[in-house]
Length: 202
Image (cartoon, rainbow, N blue to C red; front, top):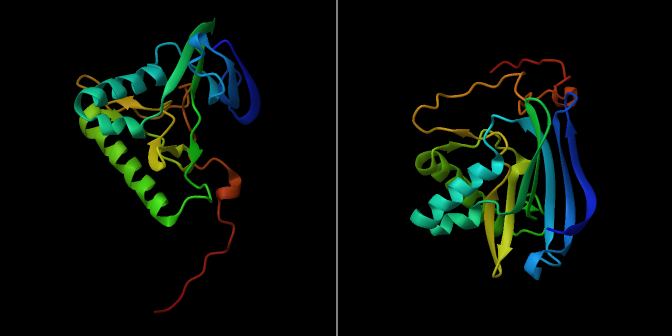
């Protein structure tokens, strides 16, 4: 991508040098004009230089899908560009440009379309685990997306930043606060219930 116009969309920060920034953009110029005018998402994230990139995991899944289950391509994210900048020792800055997807909580979806999208994503998750041997590890509402193609809705499982390879020789990986891609589940205090406990006789 040569250039793009951007709009802030999302920013997540934890410790200095760690976090994710996501910007919605429109491509103004690209080699061969293949993506001119295309809406994209630009994401940059600080990550451990030893960690396999999100793009590598997705391309591994897409390559396997092309050979064994082409229909699964409709449920995986699509990347247009990626690069890595080594800045501070064990941390590197990774930048990706990917297809812009729509959130599953989009109010324009019908009940039937929403049900299909959920089913698509469930089947994609199962295929990733059983066939591609990839564990997503970050199933959350913001990562449940969809794309519209030929007037059809296709559910897409997005954001492979925290995935783990389940292949031979790779034991299950426990979350660690020392990992640049560690998520603290339910860390927000506004998710805690402040209502007093009650009991009822039955």
